[in-house]
Length: 139
Image (cartoon, rainbow, N blue to C red; front, side):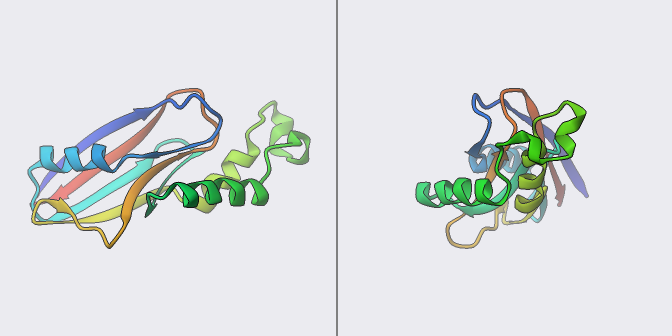
């Protein structure tokens, strides 16, 4: 069995953002030379997410509104976590909803997606660098 481990680093200029990372992951699958296997993509920070969905601007905007409704950033005093001096409790909650990682099958050397599926990095407490692990295993 072969494997490849790489880290992608993202630093978005806003508090929250969604970044399509499908092409970055595809390049790593090619680099791995694995034809049949699995690709794990994992957010390495507790206030960031990795998820799969449609790359449609309206949907991404809907996510933003929906997540802010579930866990609004303001007022920051509403969260016990923020009593520690942080202001990012909402980001922890948003990450919990959106998920930590995805696993995608590799078939014939390519990510084996369903229709419209793409991989996204979700940032909920940005303006600083954060890593995403990509681990590819197979033959």
